[in-house]
Length: 174
Image (tube, rainbow, N blue to C red; front, side):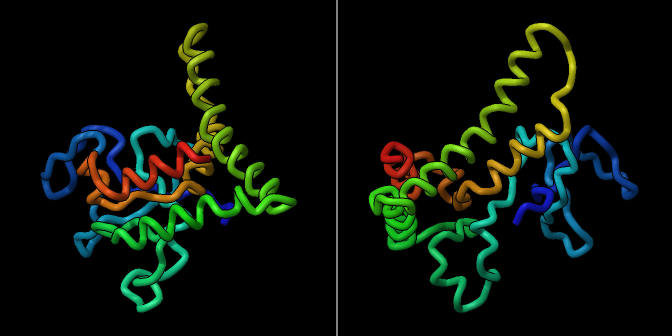
């Protein structure tokens, strides 16, 4: 859960592989079977990378249980029922009150601060020097992304989708 965040493997610079194929910076890498794979972030900047959400790994892809996992968003598209269930499950703890609402709210604030503080650090230090953001700070930013729910491929490619609209509603409500 708190291990080094995983990101979809990408080339860090323009390169030519051993087969003579050219790859541009940001292109996704393929494993020996020809599929995309994840690698540890290793202190690199998470900007421009797709961090694997811990909610996408609650169930194994392709299993019967995965079919009903409404938090899982690493598929091609998400059903309307899944979008509604995910947003209801995201919002309910806020309205429960008592210690559950307090702990949930605190966790949400911590997640967003983990994503924001490294960015603010980078902006501030860029005003005075050309120093790189420390590796530990990149890891903190990626941990914030790790605990943020993912988005289906369809929603990433289509701005006006039910999933994006549902995510907007829950983001505004939180």
